[in-house]
View 1 (cartoon, rainbow, N blue to C red):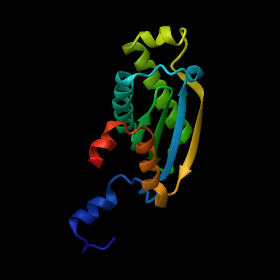
View 2 (tube, one colour):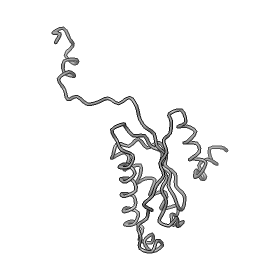
View 3 (cartoon, one colour):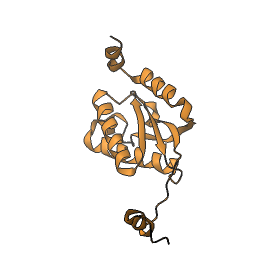
View 4 (cartoon, rainbow, N blue to C red):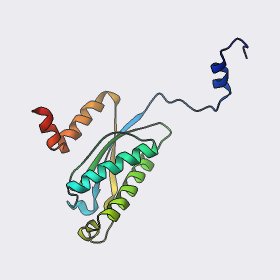
Length: 152
């Protein structure tokens, strides 16, 4: 090693090595309520958005957009190459479903005692050049009054 190196460079060389990722894979994922029943009301959707944002922050998932309707949820997020999309979806669906059932017991009645989410989901990859278009599409689908306020 060159003795003329700056102390911070020497310290960096002897510190723990962690991989640097320069790429991020983007996915748009859609999942539905059990039996596509329209049981999610505005209060459920607001709580669900906050839950998913917190879960993504905790798990290191880069959430770009979340939108939901009465019977389905769309999530646009980015993952590092070492992360698995199936694991990310399992975490999001599992934790949010259990938390929604605990916080809103009426969902259990409306769904006939079943879980909130159907076991199936749809996933698609999104290229970095199309991210803004997909985000705009998700906002237009379920944007609600926010888009009307921005337009006026």
